[in-house]
Amino acid sequence: IIIATHGRGIWVFDMEQIDRKKKSVAKGVKDPKPLLGDWSITTDMFALTASFFMKDGEVAGKISFAMGEAKVSDIGFDGKNLTFKAVFKMRDRSMEVNVEGVVDGDTIKGTLKSAMGERPFKGKREQPKK
Image (cartoon, rainbow, N blue to C red; front, side, top):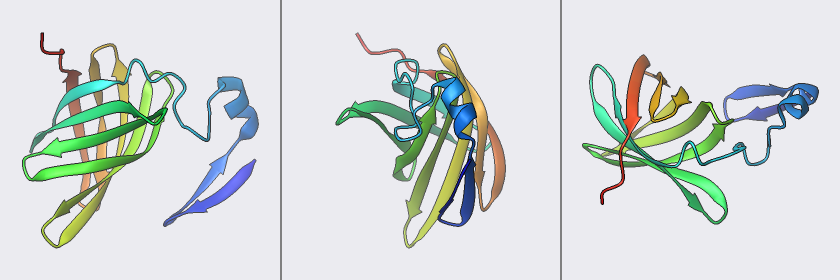
């Protein structure tokens, strides 16, 4: 077991469990293919687009919404379960959002968590334009 601090939290890693799942702790992404692309995401209050792509051999991402963009960080994806963090900046304020979701083919659903509370979301992969 490894205990690490990061920001305002403490993370506990059970290395035996991680080895059984063959998950890469360093990169956080086992197989990026099911995640890559643009996703149209909606909640009961707003819509946004989440984009995941390869950059320098690792998965990167960004969120586009009505007031701008947010860079995605701390991406974790095991082929089904997705986690990431995004910091939205609006004028002189910023808000960190932690995302937990489940990817199932071309659909995704989960929860956005921020200082303003939790909000469920759902979405679908946008088909590439021909």
